[in-house]
Amino acid sequence: MSQARKVIVIGGGITGMTAAYYLKKRLDAGGFKADITLVEGAESLGGRINTLRKDGFVIEKGPDSFLARKLPIIELSKELGLEDELTGTNPEAKKTYILRDGKLHPMPPGLVLGIPTELGPFMRTALVSPAGKARALLDLILPKKEEPGDESLGHFLERRLGKEVLEQVVEPLLAGIYAGDTFALSLQSTFPQFGELEQEHRSLIYGMMNNRKQTQLEARNLPVPGRKSTFLTYKNGLSTLVQRLEEVLRDSGVNIRTGVKVREMGKQGGRYRVVLGNGQTEEADSVIVTLPTYHTAELLGELPGVEKLKAINYVSVANVVLAYRQEDANVSFDGSGFLIPRLEGRSITACTWTSAKWLHTAPEGHVLLRCYVGRSGAEDWVELSDEELVAKVRQDVAELMGIEAEPLFHEVTRLHRSMPQYPVGHLDNIRELRSELAEQMPGVYVTGAGFNGVGLPDCIRQGRDTAYEAADRLMA
Ligand code: FAD
Image (cartoon, rainbow, N blue to C red; front, side, top):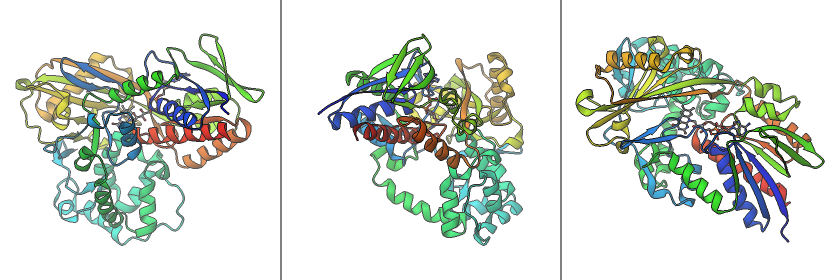
């Protein structure tokens, strides 16, 4: 016999949208009449995902792609009929460069997340000094850590591979994902596989070599573009996923409220009272909160675990997209772009040669570049005007690539407090908070990029798993 249940999902980013989608699916399958409301503070859904389609260009203002081997997003794409929309990177643009002493060096083949898995190319690269290489190879004989608990990512990598490889290769690569200071990031919450490989194989390099073979085998089961490309996106940009999800949610009767924030949340008998910014109050049996942790903390009140949630730092970043006529940017784009280590002291942290890496992003005869600004400890750009920011970025582009021409247009995107920095001990903190919630506010769930993974596939996995947990509790 079906029963009317009300669930409110707070936050209409990819985690919240996915949670609403899987919640509806699970409750429907269980024969429960589900009344689901998704509340989003901004005028449109998608959160950090934001594709701008302009003059034939496909411009990503937030995330631009996702790791092909992480399945939750592939599975969701299939369910939504978007499999044919998926596209991989240009196979001709495999090279990535890293700046060292003002010069761009190609990253040696076989680096996986900055860890060498092919020793020949690593030994030949000019990116790392002979002493730096010798220190990195010590990893092959160094003992493993006795106590396998959490530590900082920076500490782990320096311990295994040495300071030079960390600063020159791994940190700039990881900066793209976390914009973080590796010494402030938790190993277990960012790259738990590194710690596991050390425990299993003793050497990180050896473990990664082994892992690579496994990954290649697994790639055979991916949809066609994912077998050849490490990253995937949609031919019309990532907003394709948001638009399709929104359509499906609306068609299935999920009540979507945009342009209104949740201001407060509290217990009311066995249910929850959710107060909106416009003063309206809604009641629910279950609430799934998918906000950045600093907003989640405001809604949870006095639970002891909330203090640790408040302490999670979010780094602000910006990106500047520059569009050119081909003849104005007539340099060789034989790769996907370049990364800049902190030590180089540049304004930009990386530059993606977007139109070379993703062939669908620019019309014929045009070039699209995307430059990234800001990382942990280097957020002064926040104070700059758009004009100053663009001027600084163009100066780096001129000095490093020789492109001095005026772009056809530029797009500046500022993403304030957008990159969560999981501190050492984060997983334990989150576990404690969730067990406090289960005891004191059963039916309230917290999830999203600030909790168990920042990548889009991880957000989708979290949204789905939380939805299943909430649905199963309601139906029990
Ligand atoms: P969000 O997208 O932050 O959604 C939370 C939503 O809650 C927002 O829409 C917000 O408006 C809303 N909200 C806030 N407060 C309230 C309130 N009180 N009431 C109601 N609504 C509220 N990942 C990848 O996999 N690949 C990439 O290439 C990639 N690049 C990135 C580049 C940048 C610049 C950034 C910032 C992130 C990138 N990521 C990437 C990470 C990924 O985009 C995010 O982790 C993910 O989009 C977060 O989704 P979310 O739903 O958890 O949170």
